[in-house]
Amino acid sequence: MSFKFEKLKVWQKSIDLADEIDKLTKTFPKDEIYVLTSQMKRAADSISLNIAEGSTGQSNPEFKRFLSYALRSDIEVVNCLHLALKRGYISQEIFDKYYASCEEILAMLSALIKTLK
Image 1 (cartoon, rainbow, N blue to C red):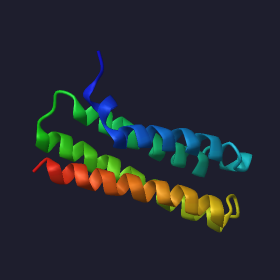
Image 2: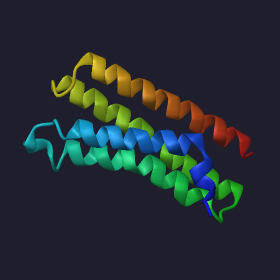
Image 3: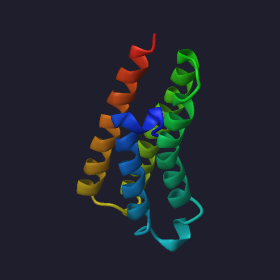
């Protein structure tokens, strides 16, 4: 038996992003462990968590609300990427890679939200 959210490509992509962000933040300086590292990991995890939580046993308006939380978490990851770049923890190439992933997830979430009107 599978859950509804497990069939959503946007959930699958958000799980992949969270895994990649977890690996990426392990390279950050130790003094960021309770600051940017923690915030970035929580934001990345929150994308898939909100998709999953809102997908099952919820009305469409309620699901849309959780998807909007996921969308905001995706944008939070983008902001964390900007901070990591500015602080010299990641290269422009790494930034661009994860930025593109966040853009793709944002587009998928936005499209899914539109289908739930």
